[in-house]
Length: 377
Ligand SMILES: Cc1cc2nc3c(=O)[nH]c(=O)nc-3n(C[C@H](O)[C@H](O)[C@H](O)COP(=O)(O)OP(=O)(O)OC[C@H]3O[C@@H](n4cnc5c(N)ncnc54)[C@H](O)[C@@H]3O)c2cc1C
Image 1 (tube, rainbow, N blue to C red):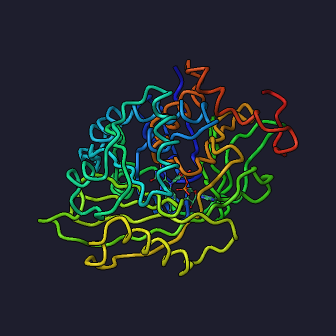
Image 2 (image 1 turned 135 degrees about the horizontal axis):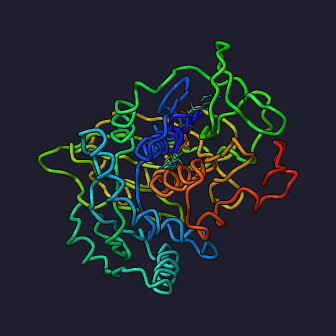
């Protein structure tokens, strides 16, 4: 079989993981990104929570989340095999907690849905939850344990992938696509270099390529904090997701005693950190886990989640030489194994799971949403 060369635009978690998958299948790759790993993937908490994030009316998305969660252990092993380093993947389960009686309704709705899908969850009284996590507030109104919802540190994953792929990385923007008729044949970089490729993958998250019509993705900004607690006496062992005054907040404990505290959700187009959102997150986190006030601040940032109208990614072929893999919304880290495998299969013309591919197919959008030629689809 001739060697296939793939140009990958965007070295976020999706572009990087797809690159590794392609390389393991024998393709050669060129990754191009002016700020590798510093987009949405740099902010993400890394919750792998198909159960806690189950949503009514989102059966297709739920199916994707579960499929990708099942693939995670194998994906982590593959990254370790390729790089010699194991990413910080922790199977520590998740507690979803209702702060007060008024929040119990949302918790009961979630549990009903989880039950109807046969997800393995365990209802807990407030006292039982506190027995598992003594740092929880004394007056919480109830909880559910999601034993299969785990976490990975996306920054550890990205650092390992970038190191493993550094020989294939160009640190500059892509300024346009090279096209012959209706087929994409490569990319032009910001410095004017033409890179010819058998296939091009656009994994640009919110990023825009000049001359390529805007994809139907909107920015949903999130503030997120990283705080430092004690490694010897960790504040939490499980990931804790809370519903406080019907607003979500989460705390994700890492092995070094630090915690990720997130995240807000706003669509005001402002990329800066909003202090009102940070204040609400801190107040709600304190309501659930009062000891959070004894930690110190490591970082607070905001990033945009590249979001589609149905929260489902856009992953599919746009012309004979062009595939897109973007719009991973709030689930991109969880969906990485699935997105990387399916993306690589589509790019290399290998057999793929048609049911999952049908869910993410960009052609579920109306034809006006795409300006790129779609003649060969
Ligand atoms: C606050 C927050 C918390 C989150 N928490 C979670 C979580 O717990 N679990 C989860 O599953 N998901 C989470 N997410 C969602 C997740 O972060 C995203 O879905 C995921 O990171 C998307 O990855 P990506 O590679 O598609 O995009 P990105 O990481 O944004 O990468 C896109 C890359 O493309 C590059 N690029 C853009 N334009 C160009 C160009 N013209 N030329 C070359 N390169 C270009 C950018 O520089 C960037 O590096 C969270 C998101 C946020 C904001």
